Length: 295
Image (cartoon, rainbow, N blue to C red; front, side, top):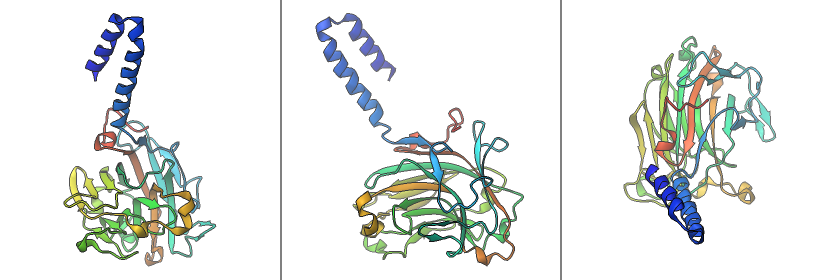
């Protein structure tokens, strides 16, 4: 890229006034190339997110932490207190047997495009996670607006990490009816993130056109590929007729979304730290960079 700047500078110094217009056009074209390599990129922080309406305790359940960080000086700390289930105009988490403290990224992702997601998590080592193992906790998901089930959702249950894919596409091997879904299971023990940072990298292609051998969902944990789905992860069931007037939109949310909470006999306070959360159009946009932290 430095060579391009040198060429432009040389043209400016040697050109006549009549050629200045051509140089301006050339410069704008180069700028377009530079920005096209990163069509969508963003740090996921308190400022670039907002509360899920069903989060009951918005004052004490989320704080900016400085004592545990993956990189830089700050992380996001989530705490979920037993019995804290919220309500919105569509219903109640209490009725759904769920509790949550969850934030949503402000910038929607678009169908038909490929996105990369990265985030690091640490489970509080003082929490007795064995008491939580009979339930499931969502630790990152993308929701299709107006649909109850997400195209993908990264979870922990039974002391293991796994990912649900709720909408399959056109391949004979992946003919999955609405609401059934498939999954990547046994992606690693929760011990990998208990008291230490675990890095997650996820690629999601939201095209509904099946290409032979193409990976539509891939997940790496601490650099190891643990999930590789070669079937589309969106289809005609992904979009709700109720939201047609708002267009097809996807958004990323993260935090602690705990389902089947009544299975736990003695539910503890659940505490999880998040750091280095990024969304982008390429792997280079989001991969962990200690020298360029998300703060």
